[in-house]
Amino acid sequence: MANRNLRFKTAIYEQFARIGKAVSNPSRLELLDLLCQGPRTVEAVAKEANLGLANTSQHLKVLRAARLVEAEKAGLYVTYRLADEQVCAFLRSLRTLAERRLAEIREITGSFLESRAGLQPVDREQLLAKVRDGAVTVLDVRPREEYRAGHLEGALSVPLRELERRLSELPPGREIAAYCRGPYCVLAVEAVEMLRARGFAAYRLEEGVQDWHARGFPVVAGDER
Picture 1: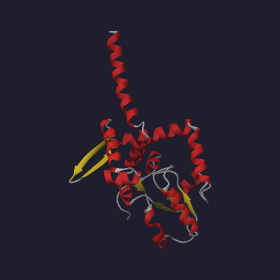
Picture 2: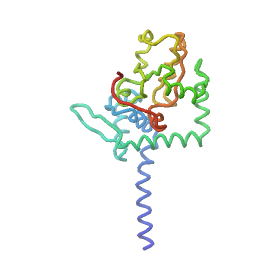
Picture 3: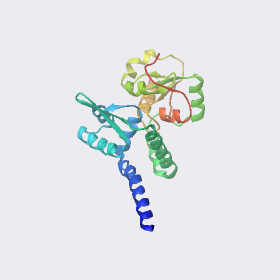
Picture 4: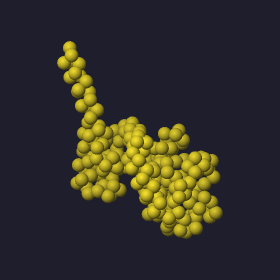
């Protein structure tokens, strides 16, 4: 009986370890983070992660073997998506735990933001309150397909690569809050720098769509109305 119990316990923890092994690589964590934004082809996710196509395919196969992602082939292209919404929740919990336990994360983030002109910290809750009240213009600067998969209610889709040529569309004299994929996504950092250089009162919203959803705030899918 004791040996049977031991085999059971060992077998269960071996299965738990499959998840740990799959997410033990920083590139695979980034790929999961990107897929939290919405389904992507291998080519698209490789481009966003700045990884080679073959390398990306191998990482995705590892994640698929651990049942964290699923794949669907249509013609020549393979599209990957998360196997379950809990994968995003797990990734967010992992990030929160790391932020609480690893001082290195605060040091790396602080050093990065200090080197970016005009990105001093703002009152996070106050900015969130303005966003919820519609007191600021909210820009989603992620690629458009990510916006369609899910975005903050009322946000405008202005991908970073389009921002400069679309500045005339932004209401003058109104504060702007730009967001992307979360606190470690640099798209919003670059957007705020560009906006401030053009005279806009712009701020970075650290929260991404998954953080917003976790707070119980409305997230919608589809194109802007």
